[in-house]
Amino acid sequence: MAANKKNMRIVTKPDWCKGCNICVTFCPKQCLELDNRDKIVFARPDDCIKCGQCEMRCPDFAIFLAEEERIRESEKSE
Image (cartoon, rainbow, N blue to C red; front, side, top):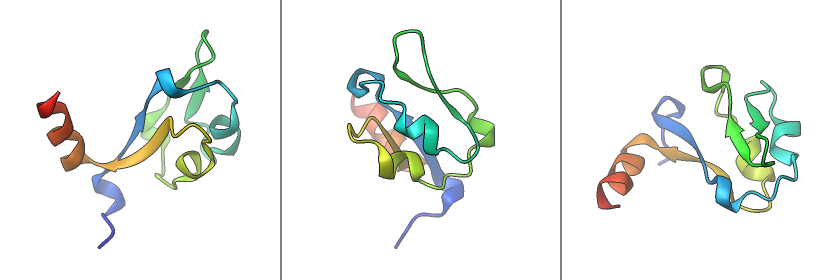
């Protein structure tokens, strides 16, 4: 079963980002930016509608939606 969007969070992996700007361009709420190293930054998380356009468009898998519970489990194991 798909997770409720309220239980989802955007995760970024800046080290994987090549700075192509595709996710920034396709974000309907302009939540994303590239930093001074041309790496993805989730600049306005409160504006995010969790539509998944960034995840769908990123050729480097540097940004994705994940369930909060799985993120917490992953952080515990690191």
